[in-house]
Length: 288
Ligand SMILES: [Zn+2]
Image (tube, rainbow, N blue to C red; front, side):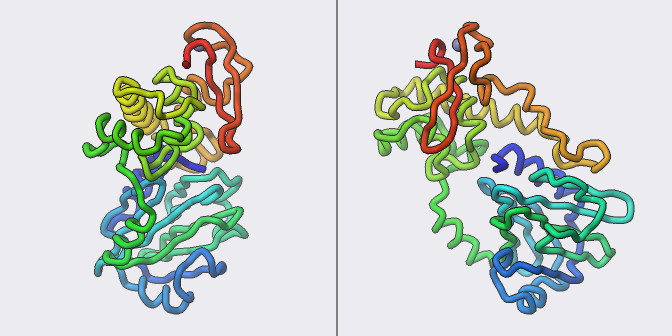
């Protein structure tokens, strides 16, 4: 599943392509992708203009005129593809040959703009969605999700993180970091990286951590996510150059999926363990 840096990268690529465009038509072949019957969805979005593209947690928020919003969750295998006469841009899950035939068997939602360009939502496993909400509904949806702070916004602080830690003493650090109620956008990859940065074992209980640990975890989250965002700048890009290519941050990963290999710091062996069904890599020497 894409984590915050990947969704942020899609957002940046998509913003340049679709802001200012007017929706002329909409189509969908999968009921669960959308939250209204198709004719109603179509009627609501037709004629609306895209005014902004934002991100909240791992979701994309396409803001339309008249106080409407399209909330997109890519889930495990979702992908957005924008195509006009000159280019084809794709972001999200890599699906082979996505730009060759569109729509294709994975396309479950299509926005057609007034200049005949299109935005396709492709999804192999069909868990993702493209839901329509008014501004008021959207606030309620977010409130119901109980989302914690955005890690790159000023309200995410070491002190705030530490007080949340006190409220969830029995959590393991990795699970704590991955829980969107504590901080949003962090999944399996970046939680491993953050634990390594903070020198704490991923299975360590949160109640054994002090304010200094909280500061280190906070710093790790911010630094790692920022570096990953700048390295992933190519994920949402031209089809010919980057279809299927992993973001550049893959090369910078310090511990994620490195089990069996040498720790870059102490030269000991990186180990793995299962936490909540997920494989976590850590260095037993560097991380306590
Ligand atoms: Zn080590």
